[in-house]
Amino acid sequence: MFPGHQIEVFRGAKVFCILCGLVLISISTPAASQTLRATCGNPDPDVSIAACTRKIQTDTADLKSGSQIQAAAAHLATDYDTRGVGYANKGLYDEAIADYNQAISFSPKFSTAYFNRAGAYNNQGLHEQAIADYTKAISLEPEGGSPNFKLSEAYDYRGNAYQHKGLTDEAIADFTMAISLDPRLQDAYANRGNNYARKALYDLAIADFSKVISFEPRSVASYYNRALAYEHKGLHDEAIADLTRDISLAPTDTGAYDMRGLAYGHKGLHDQAIADFSKEIALNARDISLYPAFAPKYASAYSHRADAYVRKGVTDAAVADYRAALKLDPEMQAAKDALTRLSAAP
Image 1 (cartoon, rainbow, N blue to C red):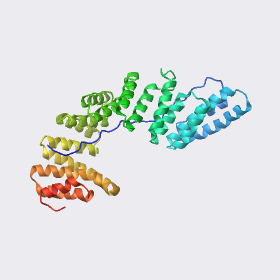
Image 2 (cartoon, one colour; image 1 turned 135 degrees about the vertical axis):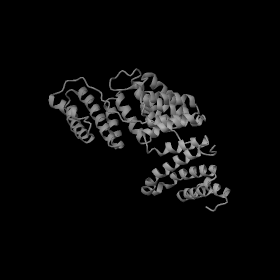
Image 3 (cartoon, rainbow, N blue to C red; image 1 turned 180 degrees about the horizontal axis):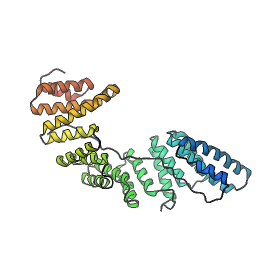
């Protein structure tokens, strides 16, 4: 066994909090205006922002003229929302939020604008505000009737916001609702699996990670997370199998080498463990040279390999590795204690 090693944290699902959903306005417009509107929403955010700005100017003039006031207001809501998406895609979340605010002021029941503003808040770490906006969007579209608003994703993203606030039960409830609405929503299964794991419900977590893998057999994060759940259950062979698959898909995944090395150690396969920790150390070397400030995070690979050497009785190699760990992280108490047990100086 490798006592005392903290098992790694679960990896989150890939989440995209900005959706370019646009409400379609069924009002006829001149051809030139239609061309402007089509460009406003261009995949290139700079093109979209410029075009939306021109469209805002045109629709503002229409609004002030007093002709087709309702249509102009509806157009402005869409214009501001679409420009907000462009700003959000550039990471300019304050500007995006300002535009979503304008969109909502012109159309207070514009569910997509609330949804997009929630995404911007999420990306700013303002999870309380994000939850409020996702909740508002859901209340406006309780049946998901709009073709431009995906109710399942609103629940999924709100679940992520709950997760960030540590509200695990609320997050699980939202991910479950998202899955009920879209049984193929992979991120919801992955996110729910992570939250089940946080509650030590490892069988449920494994089932969710397995579901993701059934949809996407090359999901590296799901193999890693399922392996981690297996490790928590003491199922080292299953963990090793998943980590081997992870490594075959992502040969530079240092976390997978580290966890597989620990799993080998738990099985008493110390040579295989040493080989994995050595590979991890080799892969980390470049990052250490490029980002020396992060060196302490790489110390554990040396400490883990040293533990394996101790169990093989190779004391000199163990001492060298514990010292290497302390060079990277002078505060690593486990390495200091190990050297004391070996009667070796730090």
